[in-house]
Length: 290
Ligand code: IPD
Image (cartoon, rainbow, N blue to C red):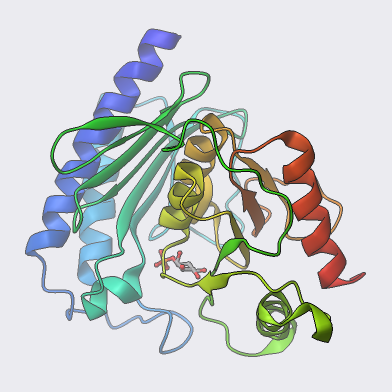
């Protein structure tokens, strides 16, 4: 019910603030021995400690709600229709390790595989993004001031890719077809129209897909493109973005109904529906038929 969703949002906010406090006092250089696949796929003791705290707090408050978390994920584990908490204890782990202050905890609730509550908190800036399905999205800043998202109530027109500020992340896999696509799409997005590109204003890669979704929700970034991140990176941000009038399509051409677990995301800020569709079609065309 609506009351329960508000209670869950409030609990996720409390848990996110506690997680944030853990990040602020942690020594991020304490990496676990199991760096995941390669040197840019890292996990710290803090990632694990936060997930443990989040899991046990949520489980004791809502024992019937399932839990899916980045650090306890088992290959093959799937989101199911049951209500499920989805947790990324630290999104932007590399930023955390380097002390680059664009790092967040990302917590969501899904029902029937759709995000219905989203909370993303960056403790280094004190920015808290929240949303409940059909109740709008908000940003509470360090000063305690709460603003509705998008930040500009009447977003500027989104007429074409040309002129957009785009977020695109690099992930940790640095070879193979996905890598080739990431590098070629960024070149195509940036390059001039005369050389067949889209001449976007620029590309930002700030290292947290969860925060990228929030910046798109706020209207500070026009669109976000990534193939390769995971449900826990995007689940909370997805709810926040949709509540702010944005849409999520797939980074795979012609898929307007991407799954949460599809790992290919194209998030577009609030604008007229025709405009959102046009920029998505433009990116799909640039990617060619794959
Ligand atoms: C990563 C970040 C990064 C994205 C990766 C994600 P993590 O999440 O969101 O921006 O490029 O694909 O896995 O590992 O820091 O939680």
